[in-house]
Image (tube, rainbow, N blue to C red; front, top):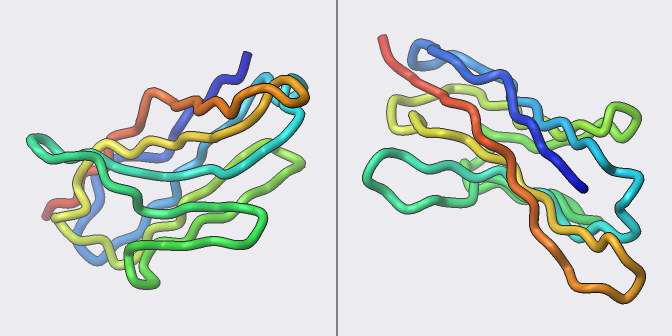
Length: 120
């Protein structure tokens, strides 16, 4: 079973930075990996993708302010967030899409999220 646990959220002033971490456990059961995403959901709003990591590279929807990266040795995906704005306030989730059986279906696993609050 694959589990994801996010950490690193908190209260930060506008213009500040945070680095979120997403640790994957149960990775020994993964036979194929497709992608890992960071996305966020603010109160009363739909969830939105903020960054994606695939074998082809990375994308970020935050115009250079957010960067996704990984440390395979630590089974950890990071989201570096710089120049934070009040509108970045949300619960941030990571999710990963993998196969746990050869030829099996792609499955997406998601963590419980970490709260990021940007306020003075």
